[in-house]
Amino acid sequence: MAFAGAAALALAGAALGADPGTWQSHQTTFHYLGISPTYSCVGLQDGLSYLLKKSGARLDGPVIARPCSGGRPSTLLSAKLKFSTLKPAATGGASVGQSTVPGAWRQVTISPQTSGFALHGGDCELVQEFKDKILPMLPVRNVKSNLHCIPHQSTGFQFGLSFEVFAPGA
Image 1 (cartoon, helix red, strand yellow):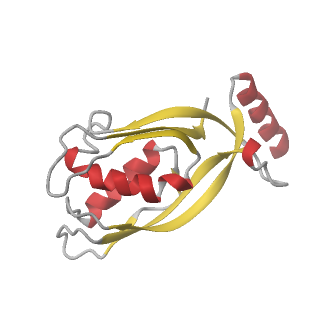
Image 2 (cartoon, rainbow, N blue to C red):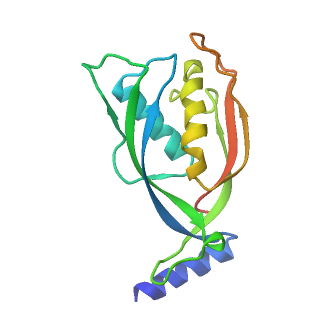
């Protein structure tokens, strides 16, 4: 019965122009080594959670930053990340018994202007490190960046990262 439901879902996704994908799990430690700004553990957790979700990832657990010293900001923090990304089935195929999920390529733009209050001009270095360390783990294409981070200076609203990501939905 579950197989019939998954097959119907896959057919419905195909009719809407979606492509099949399979979830791929990731576990990693993100080391933030920025010069400026400094982050509290909660600040780093919030920033990384936002960037992962915006990039189409599914959080499989909380983002856990450390070491946390009484809420004081630091330039040297690490965060344990556990998340899943949707990989196009055409690039690896689904394994036997692995169900597919409808997915599609969608445009993502990360900048202070598009993030509401989640990012500000001082987050350029965090976005740069996310691009260099986490983005290669995601199913992305057509990456364009305007990340000219200047230590000890806010770049204002002048940084950006854009790419296409394969994510759930049509």
